[in-house]
Image (tube, rainbow, N blue to C red; front, top):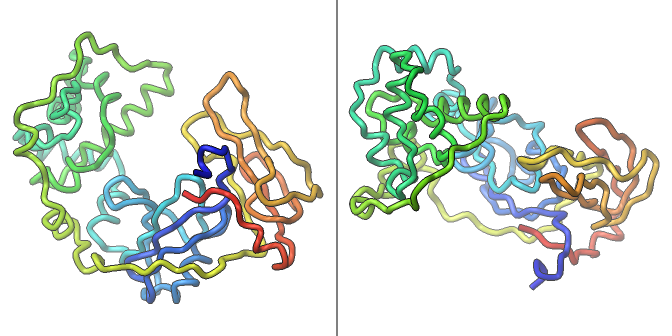
Length: 305
């Protein structure tokens, strides 16, 4: 198994789906743009599509210029007025005002919460009630946002009012982290709810609810060789510290060579060159590599994921 041999990740398998002319699963190098891989699928079927990067529940809305990183696994092109796009682009101040006016504390968001059913103390309903009624004196619902997995089910499916618990919880948790607040300690081991097996969500119903049924088709795997003359490798590809450049402008690099590292006392990742080429630009965010000719493209012994 190549993973056990500590081989570097230089390429990714990416599903390109939605409003593209020829949906495919492609093997692409890190640092290629979403526009380039969309063009490999015949281009967009829309004049101005929204790019959903990742899955429909946990993904984010990006642009055609966004880069493939180690965490990229799917790109779904959607109309700008699609349900998912609208939900993921709503501003938090609007979401809070909507919660203040429409949240009826029905508890459906909590009743279907996967983490809550596993026994974790996350309670979306209590959080929504707290922010909509300014009940900041009870800090428990706010501190327990650290236990949210951000699966998105509460706002994409559960809430009958179309509110945004997951987005607000995620934003609140990020602010707590930025202030140095650490997750609360769980005193007792989580106990799985005996209601869990009765509160699963049918995938077909979920797809219909979020408007993806028409895109639920078999997508072929393409083994065509995907290249790009210029690859822009992001130094921010993980939740830890940013990677630190280990090469200089003008350096020649080879496929799989370490081009960025991280402090060993921090959480981070090393980055490896996705192609043979030359470093033509470096800044605080990127390492740009201009690829050599195609003669070395067969050199392909690195892990893809």
